Each structure stands twice: as C-alpha cells, then as structure tokens.
Amino acid sequence: MERDDIIEYSLDAHHSEEEGRKIRRNIWMVTLLLAVVTTVEVALGAYWKEWFPGSWGAVKLIYVILTLVKAGFIVSVFMHLGDERRNIRAIILLPYALFILYLLWIALTESNFVHWSWNTWQ
Amino acid sequence: MAGDATKTLSNDVLWGGGRSPFSISYGKMMMWFFLVSDALTFSGLLVAYGFVRHSTTDTWPIGEEVFRALPGLTGSYPLIYVALMTAILIFSSVTMVLAVEAGHRMDKKGVIKWMILTVVGGAFFVGSQAWEWSHFIHGGGGYMTTSDGAKYWVHNDTHDTHDPSNAPGFHLVPAKEGHYLVAADGAHHLDHDASLKLWAQRVNYVDGANMTHNEYGPPQYANFFFFITGFHGFHVFSGVVINLIVLIMAIQGVFHRRGHYEMIEKAGLYWHFVDLVWVFVFTFFYLL
Image (cartoon, rainbow over all chains, first blue to last red; front, side, top):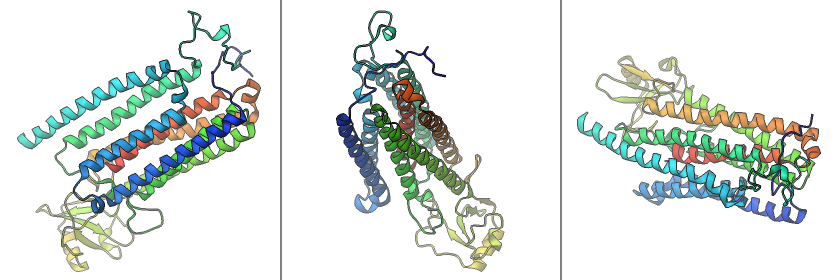
C-alpha cells in the first residue's frame, strides 16, 4: 500500500560511503562529549561542597552553561538542524527564544516579588 | 517519482512562487513545528517549577539527598541512578542518529540493527523511570513530628511504613531541618525505647509521597516531580511505540521501496527531542 499522493523530498536524504564514515566519526565525537559533560555534572553535584565550598551560585551557572552546550550539540548534530538552511533554522529557533526569554524574565521578576511579599507580610 | 531525492527539485515540490524557501520536506517541517510547540510546553513546566522554587519561603529538597538509591543496594549513591538513566537515553539517541545515517546510505540491515538498539534503550529508560517512581512514592521511611514541632526521621530495617514501630530495627533520628534523611548536627540515633516513647506522642507521620504530602519537602515538590517526569516519561513511551512501528516498516522494506528513509529521520527528530528535554529536566529538576 504505497501512497503516491504524498510528495516528499529532502535535499540531504542520501550520502555516499565516504561521507558516511566522516559523519559517523562526528557522531561518536559528540557522544564522547555528551558523556564527559554528564559525568562532570554528576561529579560536581556530588562533590561541589568539597571542591568549591560556598560557591553554589557559580556551580549553578556552570550547570546552566553545560546544559546549553549539550542542548546545542544535540540540536545541531543529532537533529541535523546545523545542516538545514538558515531560513528554517531561524523559523524554529527565533519564535521559541522570543517566548522563553520573556517567560524566564517575567517568572524570575515575579517570583522575586512573591518571595519578598511572603517574607514581609506573612 | 515521489520521494526522489535530488538537488534539482522537481516542479511537484516547489511552492506557489516556484521556489522552495526552506528546502525541507513537508513532513520534516511539520515535525519541527510540533517540536517547537512541545518545547514551549516543557519550558512552561520547568519555568513553573523554577517560579515555585524561587518564590517559596519553605526549605526546598536537594536533589542529591532525595535521589541517591540504587536498586538492590543499600547506602548512598547521590544522583548515580539518574545519571545512569541519562546515559541510557543518550546512548539510545546515538543509536538513533546512526540509524538515520545508515538510512542515508540505503543500508537496510544497518537501519534495522540500530533501530532495534534504540527501541531497547528507550524501553530500559521507561523501566528505570518506573523503578524511580516506585522508590519515590514508597520513600525512605518517612518522618514524624511531635506537638512542639520537632521532626524525627523514622528508620527500620524492612522499610515498613504501615507499622514502623513494630518493624525490626525501628529507631528515630532527630532531623536536620530542610535536609532529606539527614540527622541534625551532633544528634545521635535514639535507642529503641526512647524511639517508642516519642512514637506514641507523634502528632503527624508522613511517609513516601503522593499529591497532597510527601516526606521530602513541600507538596509542590512531589507534584512537580510527578508532572514533569511523568509528562516526559509519556513522551519516551510514545517515542518507543513510534520507533517500534518504524522499525517494523523498515523490516518489511517499505522505505527501501520508497527510495528513501526519511521516516526514520522524522521519528529520529522526535526521539532526539525527548533526549533534549531530559537534558533540561536533569539539570533543572535534579541538579539545581
């Protein structure tokens, strides 16, 4: 039951053996990087008090940066967004960034205020 | 012919203006749009968690104190189990991207091999999450409070939460406020008789976790745990089902006859997205 009413095409649906070897090596490099970053995160979670006493704020910042690094590699290499055209990259990433940056800003502002209110008036 | 992939695009696939602005197939573009909306949903959940955590005046549980058990072992292994779950999901993402790569070379055997591994990895993750939920719901013994507000962790050898005072090894430990299962500074385990005496005076006993109370911290903590990991777990489950269907289609040779393996790519986009979400859940729910 092959459907022939759906027209599909993809610019990069095929590649040669030679290109395949390069792509696979890239995949394994990214895998190694993701594994190392996750190991660092867990070790930091378990030992940050011994390693960096009293600097929880800096550790949190490191976590956020490492997470964004991981997310960037997953999206651009595993999901091949890095290989797509700039048009489609922008149409996916920009609306998302617009909403979420606003949401983060408003949630942080308002939660600060709620926290202050409870501490002051409760 | 439908599905012919070539750099010169046939007139059939061009848009009304005679161009193809995105050079991406309809199916892949719609999958991306769906993923953007799904990403907004997950971001909303995690931001809501951050809002509650940032605004609360209660002490909030610490991930490495709550999640530190391994199946079949006693002792403390902070975040090791969650790290293993993360490793399983990343491994399963790697096998998925290798299946996509094999599809690009029209290597049917390679696609089938890597898709089988992807499905197995996904099933392992869902199973791990079932164990973690079970462990979270049953808890580590719970705590009791007395009328003066003092809080004690309840311990016994068999993790009995129905009738802990009759279980072997029953004893109480004065709790360190805001720390899950951690004894107050300088406090000793109370002996059996003192524990029984205090147990008789309890005004409240909280064990395990449900939607209204939990032994780890504020009720919202367990609610967010159930909702965020549950919503993600359901995504993993549906991803495993989708991957299984695509695997069966690949075995039947549907994609080979079609001339391209783009369906593997579309299922792969969804599967990588599930991994992507877990990266953020891991950081913002477990680590921070």
